[in-house]
Length: 144
Image 1 (cartoon, rainbow, N blue to C red):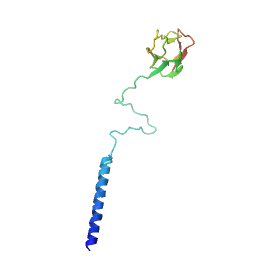
Image 2 (cartoon, helix red, strand yellow):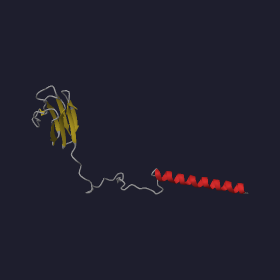
Image 3 (spheres, rainbow, N blue to C red):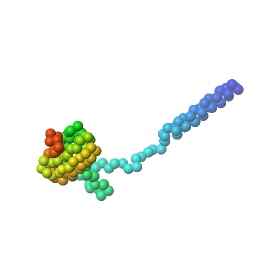
Image 4 (cartoon, rainbow, N blue to C red):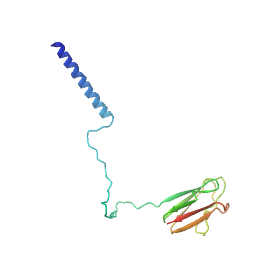
């Protein structure tokens, strides 16, 4: 009888220690028994219904596109952008370059290494440009 009693105490001790270890593991790993809901769920419009404008939505920021002047080339040489986009040219070469529109709508002037020039395209059209100092360097901006 005493042997049986000692076995019950040993089993009970193992169960208690096991439960304590499980509790420590759950607490230490960030697992919670409470249900978690996101702070704000995204609003999804109903199919077939137009989305209502919301004054809480911030206006879209104007887009900016970068063109690298690198290795005596405009990279990318051709880009398509929406109206209102600003294109920024960065001269990564160790020589002076320009980004000059063939129609005269923009001209960067001389850009030394690490200089930047930007132009915002406010009208639709195709704008070919080149480097005045290296006329074989060409590019085109297509504004839709």
